[in-house]
Length: 287
Image 1 (cartoon, rainbow, N blue to C red):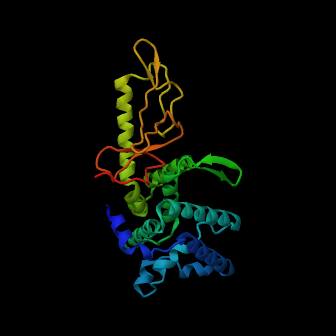
Image 2 (spheres, one colour):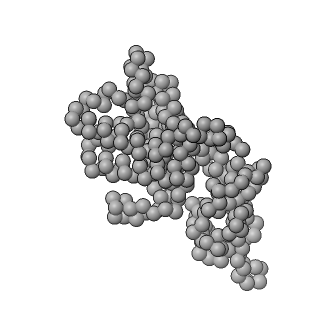
């Protein structure tokens, strides 16, 4: 049992259910007040120097600052989207784990503001919500502007690339450290899983080279998890064979049973145990 499991058993009853609903309502109130008086936001953003003078409410109110202030339509869409993301994450994790994820992001945003002496805003905190959503639900399809269908994983990759560009092109190391601080909650939750994914990619590449599945001119599989359209194996005599590379430790399902299924190694299990997405977050950890 890991630390989160122990904490949930002890203090899980204090978790705030529907947390994202309250955050969205608070953001709507802040936006309406901004429309009435644009100077209102100067009273709620996180300014370390003003917090030191006693304005401690800024440690909490900065999360209600809308990401988009110029267009009410886009503000409404973004708020609905983040409410949807928060609802999906809470449904997958439970209220306690979602609370821990969000409040951990808040704490790191506050630490970044005080250590780096910058203003604290919720933009990167919201970004970690989306990255978590894209990691847990990569095959889900969303409608961009309610028109264009696209899988969440591609939006996740786009978001990750944009963050990397911002990090590399940052004018100062303060900006770069602020990005790292802001992503700390995502890395704490998903770092072990990302490590296992990288290990799986390396194992897959070694497997392909060892078995020589793909000959010259054959299309190699994408590193983003898509399955090859060509057969998985071929014997020396030219006879095609089907070889499953992934297998769920619980149900035994392979990519041959469901080409769209994603498989991951569990960082909490002792050893190399792989699970399909139906059982990755719903199994007893093996120690």
